[in-house]
Picture 1 (spheres, rainbow, N blue to C red):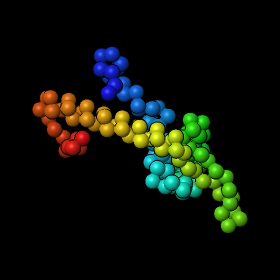
Picture 2: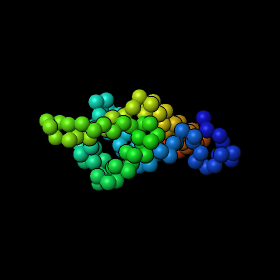
Picture 3: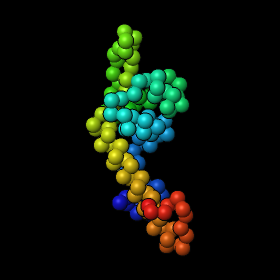
Picture 4: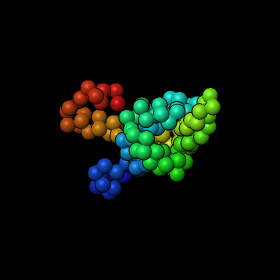
Length: 124
């Protein structure tokens, strides 16, 4: 569990990695995690609702961090770029999700302490 709020800051969860936590990059990782064979760049732009340039920049950040691999190849003699989650990326994404689960558990405990329970935190 993260440091207490007094010690580390109000929202200090060490596992909420800024590389992963940014919305677009989180979307990319979410799209890739269920597709071990990777996703074509054009399909990934559609899945994530990003422009080619925006997706490219986020993939650069993820690739520099060793989380994704961008593969250049061909599909029926046409150039195709495929994005794949690396094993390190898969591990780091699971750790990130574990940290989010901890945030939910902490929120549920805090709500129970003040007598509130919201449906979104049920079973957290």
